[in-house]
Image (cartoon, rainbow, N blue to C red; front, side, top):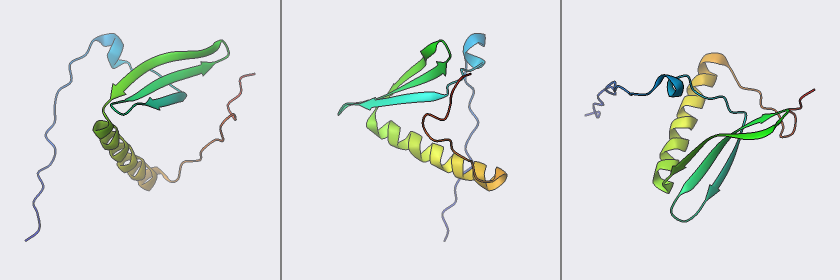
Length: 94
């Protein structure tokens, strides 16, 4: 008999107005130790590179993040077509 999966239950996220607007990032830096991964979301702009946000997670959570991102990227490309990627260094400000 096939396994029956329940649809995910919606959940509510409480946040302040400023945080709910989100942050734009066009670059990132990832570092790790045996105990954690650190992801720095960066904004490269004409005035330099600025830290937008830093998220620190366990290796197990990092693996789940990558799986969720991969699944959603595949769904996106199924709906909207392949995403063209720029080569590192292609983003230049004039």
